Length: 417
Image (cartoon, rainbow, N blue to C red; front, top):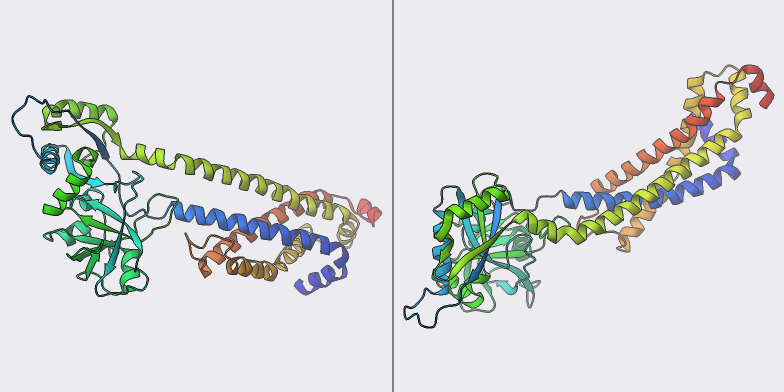
């Protein structure tokens, strides 16, 4: 039957050429939309590398000291350390950590030059990478794991000023070789740091791909230097509660804490759920994605009606042929199957041309290969969705008019012929 259908398509090539050209253009545009939608969806639902469930950020401020007060106050590191200790002692608190420009969705943007002492420096010389200055509790609080699924907090336990590389950072430095235990130096300082662990891929938000970064654990003198440099009030104090707290629950919690939310002149003046920072951070990008999806939906509707209309008109113009086949004894199911296969064969003939179009788009870097590499799997999924949906539209465009035509009585069918 396929050979017979191809023969008929060739014999009717004058009329079929226009339908083929339309399918070719529509399939190319439709594939681009499906591929873009697939990349956005796959990126959005990929693991972020951290967990913000039940995590709240405490906002800090400082009271001005009374000039007449002769007693010396606590230093900046001492105030922050005492405040964290007082909050951690509360039974409903699971963990507390402090960061500088490193809290998820805080739009922190701190960069530093770093180089491996026993790795590949050809790609890192003079390059700056994002640094996340965090206290050791950060890895437990945000549940950062290694690529093998082990908690990073367990691997850095007992290591002073541990340095943790992200998976992408370790790949840049050591090209997949074991990174743990290697020596690195950042900001051209004389002191070196040992890579204590490698984390999973860490993403800034749901719309971005992971980029190389590293975590510097702050302890001892390094903690004191960092807090003195940026100030205790500017620390991002993150608290994970043991259960899901509403804002009313957190307000009651703060009231119960009372004076324990202050250390010297440093105090907590407000709280925000990390998800609130997430919503603010993603607001603009969410609107952008919504506009993109609206445009895709509009184009999809146009494609839908265009294909259905084309094959509807084609079937209507062939009422005489369909009627004659019925008069000669063709079954309804056989007739429908023949017309479906004819439409699908026309669609299948566009496959090699669309494949060449896709290769050209990849070669010219016209599609997004940064967030998601163009692999065989991506190609198969986007092409599969494109041709499945277009096949459904073609079959629907054929089924509606043919369903009406096949109800003709034999005398009326012969009249059309």
